[in-house]
Amino acid sequence: MRWWITLCLLIGGIGVALLWNKYLPQPVTVSGTIHFGKKNHPYSQGTVYILSRQKGMHFQESGVITQAQEGAQWRWERALPGQQYDLKAQLRSDGYTTESAVIRVTAPQSGVKLLFKSF
Image 1 (tube, rainbow, N blue to C red):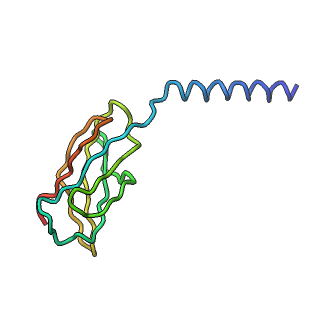
Image 2: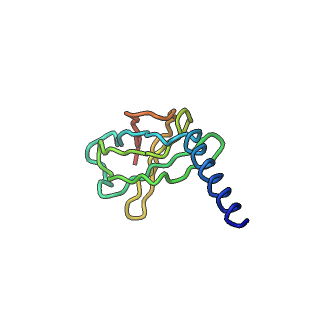
Image 3: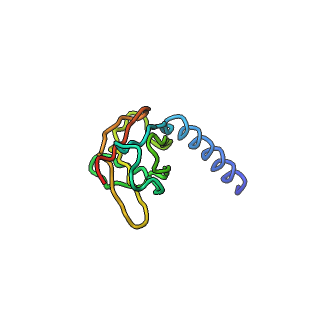
């Protein structure tokens, strides 16, 4: 009797996993570049973090980190297709923090430019 219950649970679990993979949207990519408005900004040794949020939520680090260089490329691979996100870049350097303008995107999307306006 126990083996029958175990077998039923195993087969049921496989079925749930197959349905989960079939109907759960797979993550897509949002990518772009960082821009400072000038080549020689004072924080070129800093680090840029990409932050994201969905409508009504707080910004969270997306796990994407890049160098604070003009034109630095970034790639976020955990967005859900068709979802809208607000994105911004946050520059951190020696205790100094500043943020780019917020931009709204719909995933997937490429060529997103995140611009720091002032320092």
